[in-house]
Amino acid sequence: MNEITTPISDEVIKKLNVGDVIYISGYIICGRDAVLPKVLKMIEDGTVDQLGVDLKGQVIFHTAFSTAGLGPTSSNKVEIEGSIEPLSAAGVKIHMGKGALHAETIKALNKYNAIYAVIAPVTALLVDKTSEHRVLAFPELGIEALHLIKIDKYPAIVAAAHGRSIYDK
Image 1 (cartoon, rainbow, N blue to C red):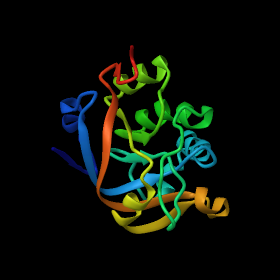
Image 2 (cartoon, rainbow, N blue to C red):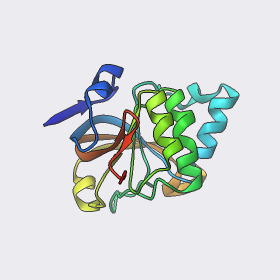
Image 3 (cartoon, one colour):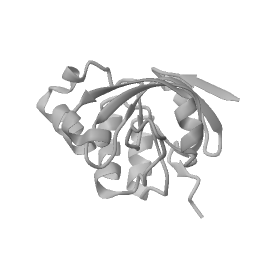
Image 4 (cartoon, one colour):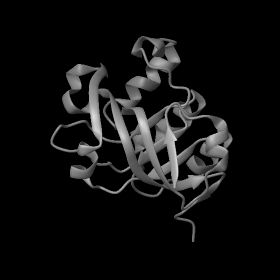
């Protein structure tokens, strides 16, 4: 069993392979198509430190936050998939969501020693494994604001690592 705690080091990522089951604990960031372009703008403007969370070694879960449940959204939406390379360049190590990614995104993950993990849409299970949450930025977006949550052993499957994808035929 691969238990991982945030922040995540390059060494941990190097040991993971496509198909590995991982259990992630610690603080992670939740964001999806409404907020991730805003975070990219903060990176470009040099204001990302205002979030109060270091992106280095971080996990981005492609979801909105709701106490009713947490579930992944499709990571291959333009705004989400387009955020993966710049967020990886900024230090994010794991992107979690659902669905296949384009080959260019898989290459970008490899370039920055980051991975993509799929997480089953098991909202009731995930809410029970979430102990804290707060809005980091863009509260006007409601449940789609950028959130920081504390999790305990979120289950995920490594879907893209080291230039390979679980979706490759």
